Amino acid sequence: MKAYLDCVPCFLSQALEAARMVTNDYDKEREVLLKVMDFLRNANLNRTPPEISREVHRIIRETLAVDDPYRKVKRESNEFGKKIYPKLMEKVRESKDPLLTAVKLAIAGNAIDFGTMQRYDVLKLIDKALGARIDEEIYRRFREDVLKGKRILYLLDNAGEIFFDRILMEELHREGKEIVCAVRKGAIINDATIEDAKFADIDKIARVIEGEMYLPPAPGFFEDNFSPELREEFGRCDVVISKGQGNYEALSDSGRRIYFLLLVKCKLVARDIGREVGDFVMKVIN
Image 1 (cartoon, helix red, strand yellow):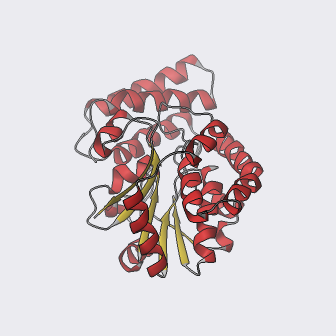
Image 2 (spheres, one colour):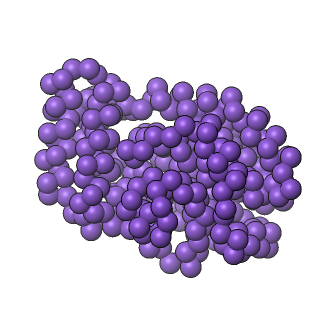
């Protein structure tokens, strides 16, 4: 999915938010915004939003002289995910269709996202997600592909959210599936890195790999920058599960069959998918 002019205000909002996580110095905040605006003035909007965002956040980090402006919110998100995880597991165990419930919870977890201008109350969204209708035909195909396949590639998105993903991965693991999880190679917004995956004990049920070949990382895995490990798994696995908007934006034009799980938080993504902002979406391409 290519970027649009409508993406520009979102990039600027991210820049200001990231700056204010690090400093309350007006001049420094202004410097960040001016440098980002200067970059965006000549940015190629035929690229995907994650590719442009990668450069925006490189500018932010270099200007602020910090390697991870979101470190504090990522830690808080992980602690929140860890705290709520047992209650989420109870909902899965009590469910008539544990796999479907795990899918819905994984989508609800996508609300933990600082890469958009939307903010959500995750606790309120959990019950809403459990009552949401997932496309029955897509879920049927997903269940069939999962049960028939052996090896699953899971593209992670955000810190904190990964505890919701762990629930779905545990359901897949109980079915005897081999799971490989891809995380960002370095810090970008509140996206999960290998340290976050280990904090959530995902490495105990899946092989965790860094998904990018070159730094700086982007908030979405795009094929031109797949690490060798991700490229191999992307080609050999039986099922690909992709979490979040950034990964959708980066991979929606891929020729590979991919199951995208996300909460729609952007009108451009909503238009591309054919849904509304706030919808819980399971979408398959190819």
